[in-house]
Image 1 (cartoon, rainbow, N blue to C red):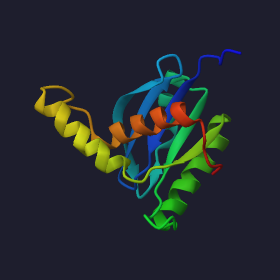
Image 2: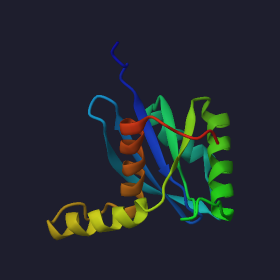
Image 3: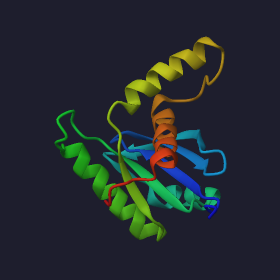
Image 4: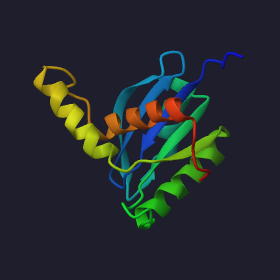
Length: 145
């Protein structure tokens, strides 16, 4: 049975800025979107909903920042809160994925892109959101917010 085409939007939650990306299941890849400003971990929901409406995702994935020992932090709780509010506001499935080391990997990838003369305006946080989407497509396993 073939899986239907899905558009997935990814969020690398942060208190000052949030990385975002969009991807689809046909290619199993994502593309970074511009950083989204946050105010103490709270987005401008009207602007965020406009961006989401523009890209029309079927579901969203939000990075869950866990500590290396699997414990949660204050940032984990805030990311969960964001994911719950997002789900309520857009009325679409929202999943959380373990995001450990994605930002470090994204920074490494970004340096490589920039050395090749690409991705001058791409942020590590948005590349981390791409990695969340691509992980979702590979594993399709998430955690409910």
